[in-house]
Each structure stands twice: as C-alpha cells, then as structure tokens.
Image (cartoon, rainbow, N blue to C red; front, side):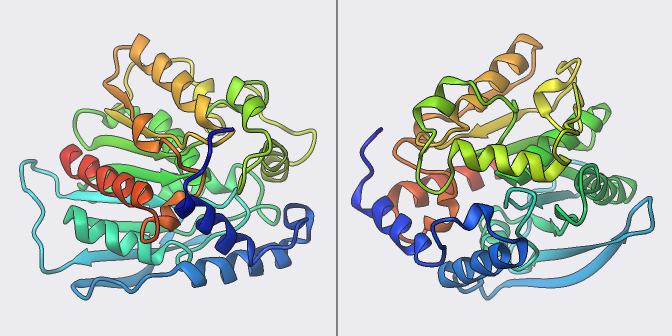
Length: 313
C-alpha cells in the first residue's frame, strides 16, 4: 500500500478515536452515534457570509424531504446562463449515516468558495428505508429545482456521489440546458468487488472491501440486489451518450479508486466530456474531505473541486 504522509496518518487516528473496531457490523443507532461524534470533532466554523434556511420538498410518495439551502450573500455568482445556478449536494455515509448536519460546514464552505447557492439533501437512509427511497428523494429535489427553472450542478461524495450519478442517468434529457454537470468525489459506480483497487486496497483505512459489501447489502436488502438498474448503479445505464460534463475525484488509497476509471472510459466512449482527476487524489484516503483543514493534499483537492464546480457554472 502507498505510504501515507503524517497528515493523513493523523486524520486516520483522529477519525478512529470515535469508532469501535467492529463499528461496521454494530447496530445502526450505535453506528450513527459514532459517525455524529466523528463529524462534530472535525466540524469547522461556517463562513460568516453564508446564510442557510431549512425547508422540505414533498416527494412523489408524500414523504417530506429535509433540505438545507445555503446562500453566500456577500458574493454573486456569474450570470452567464438564463437559468440561475444551483448546486445540489448529496452527502456520503454508505446510505446508512449522514444528514443535513453531517456535511453542514463542508456545504457552507463550498457555497462560499464557489459563490453559487447550494442545497443539501437529507434523503432517506437504510435499513429503515431501502432502495429506491434514497434515489426517489434525490430525484424529487432535483425535479423541484428544474421545475423552478434552475440550472443544476450535481455534487456528491461517496454514497452521495453514487446517487448524483444516478440522478444524472435519470435526468440526462436536461443536459445542455439545465443540467450543467456532475462532480463525483470518491464515488461507488460499478458495484464490482473484483476490481484491482478492491483487491489492492481491500483493507484500506476508513473504507474496506468488507465495508462496501456491507453497505450495498444494507441499502438494497440481502438477496434483493437490483439487476442492471441505472438508478441503483450508475455503470448499469444502457447509454451514457447524453450525460453532462463530468468530473471525477477518486482517492488513491481506496477500494473504489478503479470505479472512476471504469466510469470515465464508458463516458469517453460515449462522447461525453469527462475528466478523471486521479493526480489530485494521490496519497489520499476515502473520506478525506473532512481532512481539508489538516492535510495539505486534502485541502488542495477541495480547492480544485470548488474551482471545477465554479467552471461548470
């Protein structure tokens, strides 16, 4: 395995302070409490100029989806398009943990650096709500924004990046008008436990091959994995030809590293503008967004992600 620098080692140590060794197989309530303790320990103050308001979007099944709108009030976003730009952020957490608070500081900082309004989505989580509840909620929020005439940039990390790519599959007809692009940060895209990176980094810190198998199983239910469903696995789409410009940010030391390469090849063959920013993730682990204030590499990658979002808008 690639040697981790001292900053990444410190990030691992600080993260693991909040988890027992068997946290991935512990009960859901304990897992969520560990995750909350962890994200609170890493939380940064919000930029003073970024204001937020919590609202709800009603889904097609009547479920009220919590969303948080961020407005960088001291900045004005470029108005090159007839549709105002809206970043949609879908949080990670293995489809099991995470909410509006878990990524609050990250979303506020992203809105501040990009200058775009941003909405974070608290989609329903497994195991209480199995697939397709998660993607149903994400689509409902995106559809609400599209109906309002917004131009959307999809952004997500980990499980949220998976969902962002699935939304892009489902709403590719808006590419070139209101769907401006997608930015996927260490995403799970292939649902393939046999890629080279799954083998090489099977026991990587913070995310292992065993973790990925667990999270997939709890999302869809054991023995009920959707087959060739582009709303569950992005690389199961029958066509990628109409997807928007796509930017992928894999972490080098991550079982999911090869997912970005497979996805980039599929999009490139379909004629889609795609860039796989592999060098930006050199020496980084899955989940490194939380290390952006304590790791030079993670901080530089986060700055590049924000510049990429700005360029898409």
